[in-house]
Length: 125
Image (cartoon, rainbow, N blue to C red):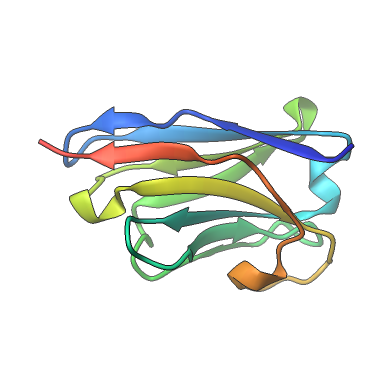
């Protein structure tokens, strides 16, 4: 069975950092496009970042460029999202998701096939 399990969320002050983890089971993560998507209260889901399975290219929303970094560890079948310089507007539930496609571009939210359960990130002083 295909499954994604997220962890690493929590409460952090503005300017702080968190690292989210997404562990895949039932499939090899490096054969899928993996993305991070967030949903703030009262807002639509927003694509944050993704990493291509074809060439390893990474893509970021303008709102997080220079602050967030997506990476993968194939040996651990895990994708990470390192979040630095966090802002209150980053507060959201963060999901990892997988797409069974080989494209190399910034995937839209609708293109993902499998989703994790989400992990809460709260940025507040």
